[in-house]
Amino acid sequence: MKPIINEKTRQWRPDGHSQTTTIMKGGQSYYRPIPMPHAPVFPVADFSEFKLWGTRQPSQFDAPHLDHFIAARYALFAALKDMECQPGDEILIPAYHCKAMIYPVLKAGGRPVFYKVREDLSADLDDLETKLSRHTKAALYVSYFGFFRDIEKFRAFCNSHNLLMIEDCAHALFGHNNGIATGSFGDYAIGSVKKFLPVSLGGILTSRNVLKRGLARRRPALQENVKFFYNTLERSAQYGRHTGAGHLVHLLEKLRRPAAPPASADLPVTPESQDMENRFIDEKTNHCPPLVTYWAERLCHQKRLVQKRRENYQRLLSHVKGMTQLRPLLPQLPDGVVPYMFPLALDNLERVFPFLEDGGLPLQRFGQFLWPDKTVAACRNSLFWSRHVLQLPCHQGLRSEEIDWMIETVLRCLDKAA
Image (spheres, rainbow, N blue to C red):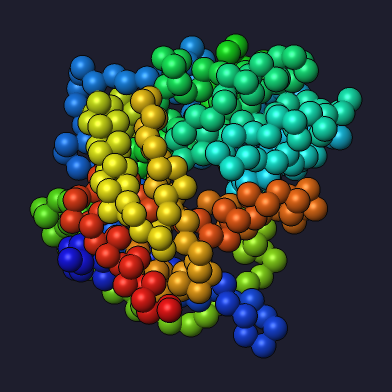
């Protein structure tokens, strides 16, 4: 069953199609247009998302010192500046990564040094030790997809080698490991609010101590706050969560601009488009997120969020149990884990991927584009995950029929690509 999308709202959105996948034509890389996902990749606002009291769960928000940013990558940059990262300082980063982890290091003047990751997604501490030098400043630990893997051992390793530990909680805003809340192990921890709450912007930096470097905060103006609130409402209406809001958005968009024609042309990949994230880190580091992000943090029904994400993950597990063509990367859901997404391995992912995108499947591919470095290429696990693993959403805003449809779509696309 195909999920229901509010087509009246959708047709007025300029991003009804987007260019995210590259193709080669005549030796030149192009972005090709793909349809908008038929189910939300990230949470969208719903009245059941919010509650005023009695829902607190272990999370990164429990940290004693917290600063807000518009995204997690800017929080990472601020952490590096606070630890006084100097040119030549080395930051240990897992070979399985996204480029948003690398750009802040380069902007701060540091040098990324990559270490291997084991099959269970834990850090290879033996390899990590071989990467140490007198220039090593800090080590980055990642809770991939919300799962903790030997995080106590990683903390002990950093202690024994006098390293600062940066805990990357972009996939683990909520959850705990043996009763200790996420974000509590690192000297610094970064989180991504927009991956867990129905907002378009939001990242946080938590730390054991007050940041040494004062941060000049640039707060959004009134018109910006109104715009971000409207965008939140629009995304919710787009996926049929609020019928009344959908009609209102449709009317406002009709008055404001003509319907955007679907994108049909391939756009060339330029150095400017590839370097966008790198170029904007400096100027947006001290930007605060909009007020709607703060409201979502305070009013979020945390207990429901935790329960629904775990239930949806288990539902996806039950769908793929026993399948040979679809293998869950993490087939067990331990206590304390609040999953970010559902990672799924497909042997012929590169062949089937265009069918999945054209079918409107909501998905992500963490680590699809790894940093070009020989030590990254030496990590066989990272290369395999980069080429064969995609992630399906399991967030609290999904409906059961959308989850069932996602697996049906994957199987149908596998048949098409055969």
